[in-house]
Image (cartoon, rainbow, N blue to C red; front, side, top):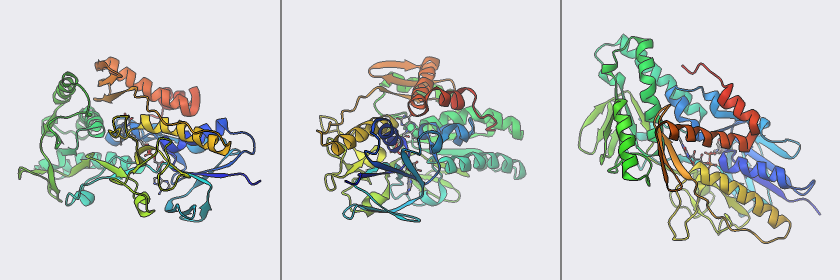
Length: 402
Ligand code: FAD
């Protein structure tokens, strides 16, 4: 009997963990597994706000996939997925076509611009190693440019759209980096402006209690961040950002962290989607195509009360475990296990030495929270690469981001 072929699309949190778990748990010659990813490295999206602001090197946010998987057990294919054909059980890559028995889709998210005019053209977003390298270079360039063309306040004005998880973490790092850039480029810090624009009345990740939000916003304001809450961005233009109040903030830098949607390949493949994401069954499979498992930002999982859980790395990792287990159960003709989300908490950084969050229901803030945040990162590195990876990425790490 021929072995089943499992194809995993995307080596992000969900896809990589599925591959690592299959590698660990499958028996010899039980199945063929192919992992497809557009880069030869895995990147930790949760780390990207730092290299984007320039407070850490982007090398510390990525790991070669060959260091994480055993290529005798998992075949890695560096390629870009162009089309998924679930009815034919095929995936079209840029250079070949794969057929599969079971598919895992972990292709992550795309930026949701909500149709705001000019957002796609004039804003940058924190999405990948390439995008954060670009943002960091752009910020330095604006500082350099401000010295060449005096009296252009817009060069030293930075606007971040969205004050949720990504927006907050990036703004915190950016505020920490400004003093260094001012020294480097002989710029008076009083000339630098950072605006964080948010459509909802409150900043920081949703679900945090009021006192932690107040704490977080106070920390950010003391770093020089100016909030514009209950304020939507109406348009982005080459001159700057137009707010719904009609105000124009003149700026040369717009970073959009206001929303995500699932990878558009799913909608193009005919999956029923809500903002590009697919509601999955209790075992993480597509209702339409039960041979397809969907993890991470591409999927929607609801709580027992029917509320969708927010897309985050924590749930994507847990889904990776569950998808791998259910594939093994299926291949072995055993009963599937429903996915149960074990919410461990949320900690958002407010720059290098400060953070705020909830561990289950316990509130944490300040340096202690920042330490916990680093422990969460270390735990993930341990999970995918053991102690040597923690050593490489957190202790003996690449320096020289500036
Ligand atoms: P991803 O990790 O995004 O991986 C998708 C993979 O698919 C990537 O490797 C990509 O290269 C690959 N891919 C995409 N398209 C193709 C294609 N066409 N062909 C081949 N490969 C492709 N969550 C938390 O829980 N805690 C945090 O502290 C946190 N902080 C964050 C900070 C920032 C700045 C950002 C941007 C996000 C943060 N998140 C956080 C959210 C979290 O990172 C995402 O929810 C998580 O990355 C989703 O995992 P995933 O497996 O769905 O996709």
